[in-house]
Amino acid sequence: MPDLADGTIALVTGASRGIGSAAAIELARMGARVVITARTQGGLEETDDAIRAAGGEATILPLDLREGEQIDAIGPTLYQRFGRLDVLVHNAGVLGRLTPVSHITSADWADVVAVNLSASWRLIRTCDPLLRQAPAGRAVFVTERRAREPRAYWGAMGATKAAMEHLVLTWAQEVAISRLRINLFDPGPVATRMRSNAFPGEDRDTLPGPAAVVPSLAALCLPTESRNGAVIAFA
Picture 1: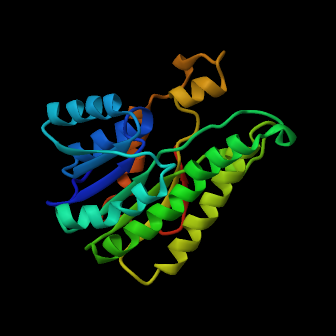
Picture 2: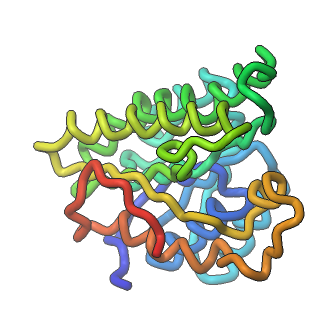
């Protein structure tokens, strides 16, 4: 795979484990300076260690996506520190409680909406100016098939991911005449902790690991990527 341009700054959310961590490591391998965010400091440090062990550079930014003001500060913080942002990979998300729609509690609903939907809106607001200014700004939002294929008990996750998809695809239309390219990436079933929580009896050995799917995700961050407003599924 081609490398990213020198000086590329990439922001990756949910980078403490799973797909987010693997994506951050892959982007660093391709030459990006990666800003990694998550709530878990220990997980971020493990990702940072892996990036540095491979000769890459990373900056740790502990972040709780439930805290809107923390998200709003990302754009100004990146501008002050680096003067640019070239790539945004928004991977962070929560499963929520798998339960009938009529049984979803107010607290659970608010939590899933905050992380899966509101955080996406705030990230778009804070990152849009820098991404538009980049020579080849790229944004990739990780989605889930339940957004397009409803399944019993997945109402909160599916509804918030569907709304997130709509928001991202609308944004993509709004920047179509710019150099910025925005897409959604659906990795399909992957051996992650979230997947294990949803399907505790599933044989993880039958699923691809995060490292197997992130090259396809990272390819969407290249300056040569011309698609915009697409939902790309891992195959």
